[in-house]
Length: 407
Image (cartoon, rainbow, N blue to C red; front, top):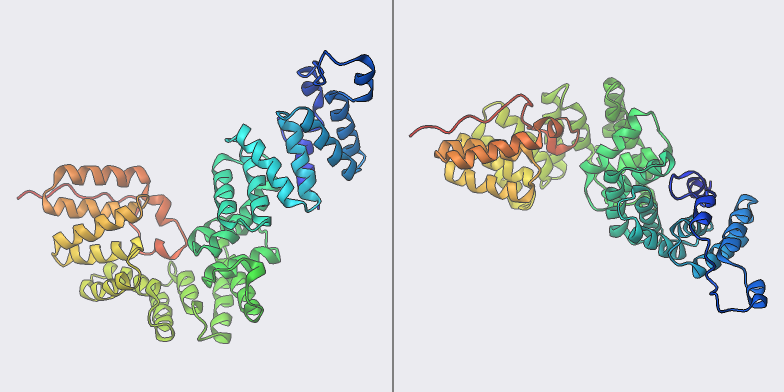
């Protein structure tokens, strides 16, 4: 499948077959006026080589096209359309390091072009520059990717890389788009499974002995993400926990699926997870957030303190601990924990909601107003709509922190 070749032929502003405009802008010969007529006849001009490259590509003579594009960009190094075309040809011929060199040059010329950045990211992935690949693919998604084909490939690989770097909730959010569009390829199902089982692997790196479990979990998570077949998702998860009752994160994944419809059953799954994995801090936090909802503040305090000990840099742990302390009247400690949470996750509306409440309790009106404004700006609805573990205990979108209390 030559996805990149198709892109190169159709992408606005970068089409190697839309050469008429390039020719019109390149009337001057790159050979130099001082050369003799015979020398010019012996050495083809840039326009001639560029047309030859396009003709070779149109005829599917890809090796010839590569050599011609290489010659053309040597004659005119700033020909971005040609470098883009050369990069796509090299990629489709599995010559990833060379393709990467070309896409890097194009990105330098067009740093805000999401399509080119996505192609560079895919090349980085092929040469195992995983961190660069992830950064490129996420940035490309933010900018927008003009080609639907490349956008799909980029999103899939971004989700796979997020799993590898243990950013499972973010991976799940990207994968939800595949589920909502009913794109249930085996690759998508596998990445879903790795996400909900919290396994830090690319699909190609996953242990073979876990493959069946990953696919089963992925199928359950796919239906969970669709949001229209909760009973079917539950059925798949029940089968999963029945076959793998002691496998790490199996009960936790089922609990997350159950949370909205049946929080009591979800909590029981989180407790089962803790019985087999006593240091599972995410399960602790899920239970703690539910205890906070039920007013069981002392119980929530114990679990959230333990979670902070296990994961001191997890903002959700600081959030839960800060909220428990605030409800128990330990306002100074609550402010300290919530401020730490805000530093760890400056995009978390939940933390700023609670921080505004804590500042209000302290009578720090200006600080409370700033935290409240940040909370409103971030938009609680965005985070509370998430399906990942850290969404549990979120703030209702209509909620607002109270004004500061008067002394």
